Length: 147
Image 1 (cartoon, rainbow, N blue to C red):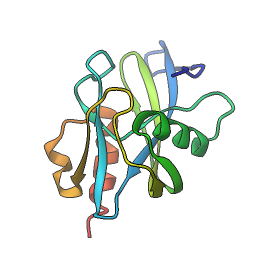
Image 2 (image 1 turned 60 degrees about the vertical axis):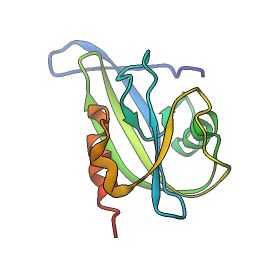
Image 3 (image 1 turned 90 degrees about the vertical axis):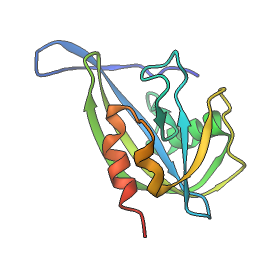
């Protein structure tokens, strides 16, 4: 996977930290289950669960990044998606902006293309999984999608 160039931004302590924009897909299948993936142990927040996605490359739209990352990570092709929310989070070493989209139509059978474990879970099960701190807002919004 190619890494996107990083834009530098100052945090409240006037320390320069990396600012990273990330496209995130909340993929819900026809049965109403949501797709989550377990971060690999060597990654930041390794062992925690996340919604699939990845860094938006320079001069790439969020929609294009979402389609590229979901194909690379979980082997599905996005057919239709709509904006769900945006979440900003600051870690000590970086600040992230998660641009979250609900994937409403896709083709393919999801699989962990990068060796990661994936699961389709009921939305009500989200609190049973440990997500990175930046994903807390996403989990709350996705939980509101319950009928």
